[in-house]
Amino acid sequence: MAALILSFLAYKYNRAKDQRARKQSISDDFWLRKVVSPVAIEPFVKFVISLSSSLPSNKTSTEDTERFWTAGAASFGEFSASFFNLELISRDLHKEVEVLLEAMEDELSNYCGALQQYLKDSTQPIPDRGQTLSSLGKMSRDVMQAIAKFQANVGDD
Image 1 (cartoon, rainbow, N blue to C red):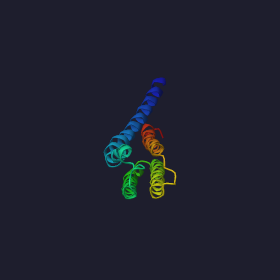
Image 2: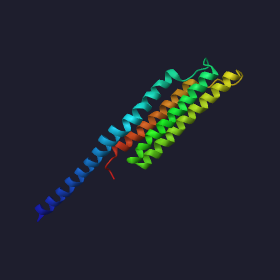
Image 3: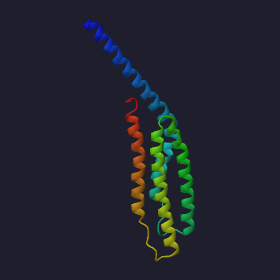
Image 4: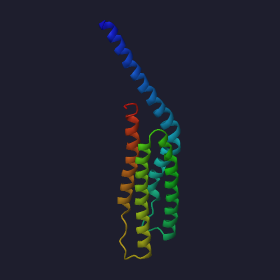
């Protein structure tokens, strides 16, 4: 009788483990690696890396700052659309990433706006480029951490 119970429990355990592994494989291998990463994560990471060299400074013209902001806003629109694919695997993850992207866009907007004000009127305070880059870097790390946390917990429900 004990052997029969142990066999049944082993069967249930192995079946649950296999279902978790399958769910994790589908979510991780297909959705994250094949769908979300190439269209959303990789372009986003490249954009964030490029900010250190492309973010305007107090030596930039107002026109160049405006062009940078226009291109940056378009990029965030594209990131928002491409990260929408996260909703295929988790609405909560998509919402979390969307909030972080909006915060990044706001940070960039505030910096570019303050820089334009300074460039038009040098009595205005110079915005802190280094602080802006640091904030944007931290927020982009938070985006990656949210995705990594979700990925690590796939199948735990």
